[in-house]
Image (tube, rainbow, N blue to C red):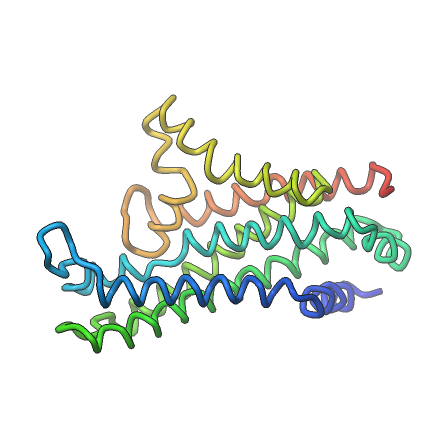
Length: 248
């Protein structure tokens, strides 16, 4: 099979299950919670300073880190469950060159992750825009801000999905893959910061905020490169491991 057909087949597998709908429901829920926060939430002094300026609103709608985490779970579950249910076996029979099959799977999951990030940000923006009508403030983001948030979230979610997919291929167990992802995304970064304070500029949350334009700990190019590095190391490892390990 050609590489394009392999990617199409992987995308078809992703879209013919209920999992994308479950993650869409998560995105809708987050958007709804954000809308409620805008309407009823206040700062400690009772004001709504958290939505009073364009900078504050941009920070509120910066979805990149959320997208990275959610898409990471999506990627880990999507790939690991194929090994758990042995549905990866027909794929390797159709394409015996496993590196091509795994690469197609990684590409498909990465594209799906980018879409999740885009949709999550769009839903959040719509929710905030509608909920602002119940306050004394209007939607203040410029077209450039909106574009940056959408692009940053799509990019961050794509890297998160690639990271999750790589871990899913390496671990090959849904529970184990999710646990490993939680360690890498949630537990390891704070520990690294405790051991070396300079590491805070390079943890996923900071990098995603830099890409969104709501932090400046490192440069934009450095943040994007670092996010790619976070994701590609386990992805590359998964391609080599898949070729040398028995499927069942």
